[in-house]
Amino acid sequence: MRADGCVTATSARACEIQVADCLPVLFADRQGRAVGAAHAGWRGLAAGVLEATLARVCALAGAAPDEIECWLGPCIGPTHFEVGPEVVAAFLGTGAGERSAFHQPSPGGQGRSMLDLAALGRARLHRAGVVALSGNDSSLSWCTRNDPTRYFSYRHRACTGRMAALVWIDPTIAPQSGC
Image (cartoon, rainbow, N blue to C red; front, side, top):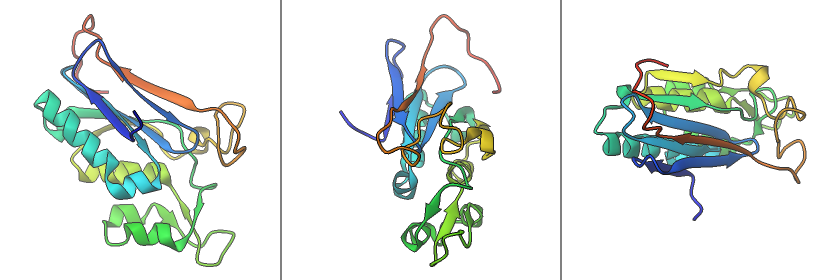
């Protein structure tokens, strides 16, 4: 099955997302009742993949969004992700925090912008009620295009591998508070 998000409340299953420039996001209920994973490219973000995955994890766990922890993995960084006006238009009017993820103009000009995909993901998760976020802080060290020896990047080389991000419930570990 192909999808941009998956969730489980079963300890015998793992949720996996594969990426090569898009943003992987892992979700975990602090009480260990449910987990999820989302593949967040700009189209998925515009379509609400993070909010939908969060809602499903919350429903499975019987938890509120502020009881869910999220980890954002490596993705193409803000100095390498040039997008056209159609991408900016997909997010217009969606919140001031999201507008700040677009940096204009791009070096390529012609109405193009540079997009901070991780900042856009963080803004959407914060707006949805998530308070515990860790991982990708939009720095160069998290950029897949910046370091092809460490990460796979479709924009560096179209014929490339994929990175996998996994999350699961381990019944042998007691639930933790905080990140």
